[in-house]
Image (cartoon, rainbow, N blue to C red; front, side, top):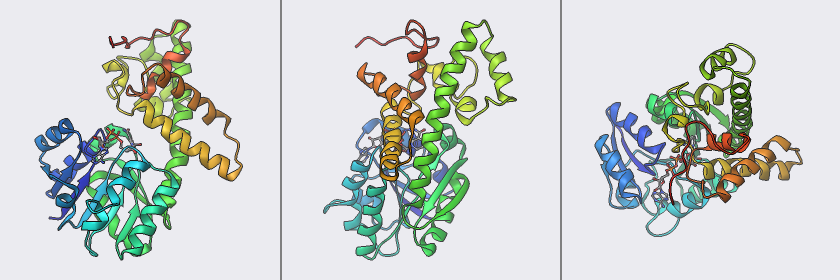
Amino acid sequence: MAVYGWIGLGNMGGPMTANLVAAGHQVKGYDLNPDACIAAKERGVEIAGSIAEAVQGSDAVFTMLPKGEHVRAVYEGENGIWAHAGADTLLLDSSTVDIETSRFCHEGSSARGLKFVDAPVSGGISGAAAATLAFMVGGLEEHTAEAVGHIEPMAGKTIVAGAATAGIAAKICNNMMLFIDLMASAEGSQLAEKLGLDPKVFWEIASVSSGRSWAQQTWYPVPGVIDSAAANNNFDATFRVDLARKDVGLALDAGEMTGVKLPAATLAREHFDALIAEGLGGKDCSLIVKNVSPDGTVAGYTQEKK
Ligand code: NAD
């Protein structure tokens, strides 16, 4: 049995920690949101009163937080991870962050004699629940080798991407592809419906045809077609619009840095920005389907009263 510290028990951290507990490990979780703590406790996570409590005595500490600023905040300072981690503790950040934040974590850890790897994931909350996430890991070889064992109870596949920040670079490129694919499912699903196709029949056709993608298989934005779609639950978030906007923004920043032209990713950003401007940043990113409907209404979505 290993002991884990875990910071961030949200949509992803919740089910990921449940899988560590199910594998027989002790997990000390910390989150600012009391509801997330209650849900995690029901799944066997011990709730820590502070970051220090979660970190001290742990074999490894995972962070699974919204953005780079949150990750930096929990690492730094006298109450942060760096102040309380031991030299034997492996630190893993599984959040999707910018490359600079990941480099900050690598360099800050190394300067303190601590072990850090970037270890972002792909697979959504369904993959987190089913322990089939793809982990992409970056760091020193001896640290990435150690990381693989800690990750195993949550992963379908772990790939060492390379040196420091290679995992997060892979994640940024992957998610850009995901959101471009999501636009295809949004447009395809609505056009199919207006052309009189039964949504389930069309989804089955696309599933064995060239329209197939992970977004189409997992997030198809029409209710009653696949169980994992947010469309079945009024587009309550499995992956929030504002986080999707963040991820596409990270790719566009990297495009600017490298000179690669990214018109499709630019369009995805416009979709997410439009939803955020309507106050829908907390809904599921597959709600971009609303932007392609002729009158802005969409099956499975009823606007909540504000
Ligand atoms: P989420 O918003 O559901 O969960 C994040 C949790 O972090 C929240 O419970 C929040 O209260 C907590 N938190 C924020 N600041 C904190 C702090 N300072 N200390 C302690 N807790 C704090 O987000 P999520 O969907 O679980 O995503 C987490 C990360 O994983 C993001 O970077 C996201 O981009 C990435 N990701 C998400 C998915 C997905 O499908 N949801 C898939 C792959 C990767």
